Length: 104
Image (cartoon, rainbow, N blue to C red; front, side):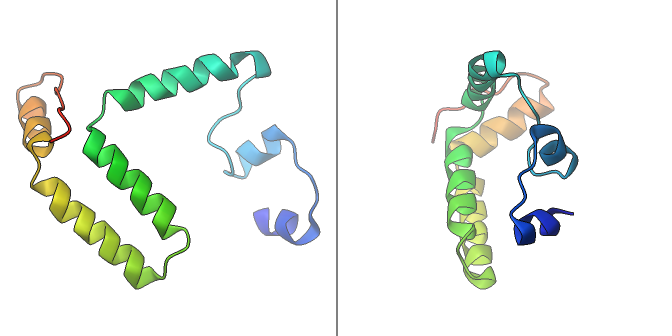
């Protein structure tokens, strides 16, 4: 269905974009800032190195060849697997507590 809009250039409303899976949710204009802050707060509790590698992988991967993107993801995996934050995340999960990530 999205192909139709790409080929025709027709405009779509937010509800249609949601139905097509082009956006993850639709927010009222007066709720956008609150929602953005809510999302930012939830991200701020995650492992900062992992968040950075996810952003790097997505941003680079959009324009990369498949092999380059896979190499980047592999390198990120090996890098993150050796961090203190990875050990903290696993320990926190096993101990059923909130992880305290340090960006190391």
